[in-house]
Image (cartoon, rainbow, N blue to C red; front, side, top):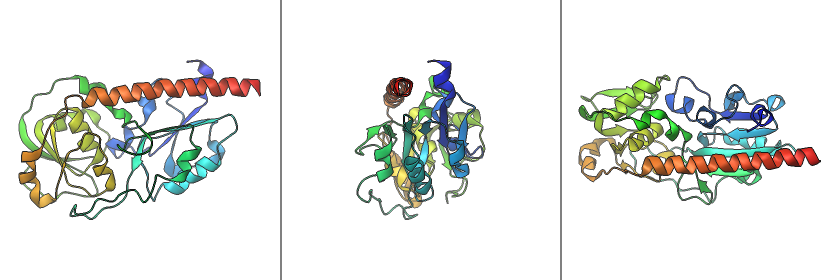
Length: 271
C-alpha cells in the first residue's frame, strides 16, 4: 500500500487506555495502516476528520455513540471512504439476565452511508467481521491450565461471586489479561472481550449478561444469572475453529478495505 494511502486514513474508536478491550480493539494495531492518526469517539471533532475513515472496533452501536456516528455519516466527504470494522450493538439488559433485547428493527440507518460495513454481532443483515483483536499474537501460544474457574469482570460492574481468582478489564496490560484468561478451564465473565478472548483461547465460558452485546457472539458462551453459574458450567463447550474463523473474516475484510481505498484514490485523481 502506498504512503499516500496510509497517511490519509483516520481511525475513530473508543480510545480508552483504562479498558483493555477498548484499547486493543482497533484494526490498525494489527493491519498496516497509519497508527498515529486516530481519534477517540468522545473527542469527535469534524474539523480533524480525514477523507478516509475507519470506525471501530468496539460496542459503538449504542445510545451514547449513535449521535456521533450519525453526524459522521452526514459529513462523509466526496471521494472519501467510510468504513465500519468490527463494531457492534451495546444496549442495556436486565441485570439478572432474564431478557434478550432484539434489534428494534434493523441496525441504525447511518450505516447505509458507509462504503463497507463489518459488524461483530452475528446474524445481522450486515457482514460478520468480529473484533480485530483476534489477530493478537498471544493466541498463537499454548498456555497451561492451572485453575478450574476464574472470574473476569467489567471494571464498573463487579460480579457477585466470591472465593475465586478474579481480574477486571481495567487497565491496558494485555499480556497479563490473556495469561489470566488462559490459566483457567472455565472463565465466568460479564465482559465482552473476556468472553471473546477466552473463546479464542479455547476455554469454556459462562457469561453473566449486563449488555445486549453479550448475546451477539457467533461462538456463543453459556448465558445465565450469576446465581446459576455452577450449574451452567455443565453446558459449556469450546470452539476449536473460532480463532481461525475470526482471523479469516478480518483478513478478507482488510483486503476489501484496501481494494475500496485504491478505487477511491483513483476516483479522486480522475475528478
